[in-house]
Amino acid sequence: GEWYLELDAANAKMQADESARIPFTPDCFYTIAMSADPTRYIKSATAGLSTQVFDEVTFEIHWRFVPAVEENTYYIQNRETGKYISVANSGKRVKAEATDVASAVAFTLDIDAPGEIYIQRADNKDVYLHNYVVAGTSQVQAGSITDSRAKWTLIMEDNMLSQPVIST
Image (cartoon, rainbow, N blue to C red; front, side, top):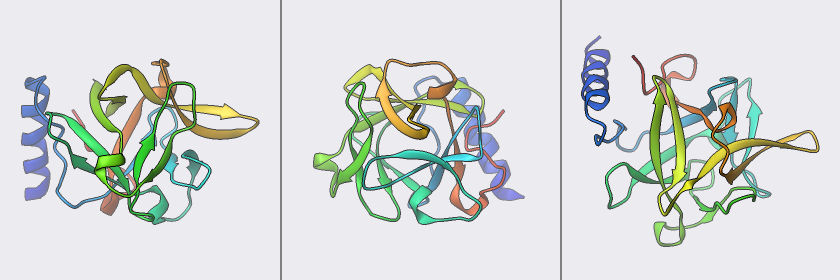
């Protein structure tokens, strides 16, 4: 319908202009799925972020991208807790503990391929969010890993099954 035409036009413009922002719908939440395994979503938990398979929709896997001052820079807020990602140090598990953007970490989104992005610290482009398995548990960590573990797909919350935000 009309919404898809608008999204297609926004995607075409974004892909033609490397400095364009990724087109987020204001006040909309997204899931962040692993590109290598799109059934695994980033989930917020007290111990830190993890990637898990979900059979049902839960607010723990919904995230909002709040624009920061710089172009293509965002604070990432969890729907369930209302907290922002605030701990993203290299080699450490990522956590969402900040109650406002002043204490949050800003991220840039770098398009790798249609439907795939890297999520990088805005203040250190060498630090990416990536999936990491520790003692059988999939965690989200920060570090210099840029292989398939660091590639993510954004999916609008109201269309959980198929529609990536960035498409061809």
